[in-house]
Length: 87
Image (cartoon, rainbow, N blue to C red; front, side, top):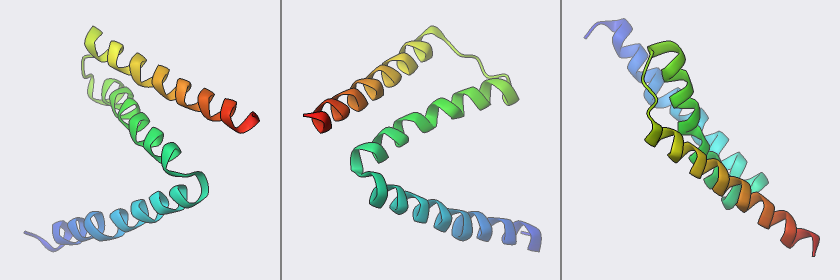
């Protein structure tokens, strides 16, 4: 492999991954585990949107149903957290 390829691999493997892990622990510390798991469920939604926009990937009805299920479950979790904190 060329030097540029090796540097790119190092950057993605170490620098970008380290930043992502630091962000993950920051979110965990500030917002808790439930919020962090919700973020993990929402990330693929953006992957699908960007795949559709930039790579012209097809979005099927099964994907739409799955996305709706993720969004509804995230909403219900947030709603239940607010209900518990107000009582």
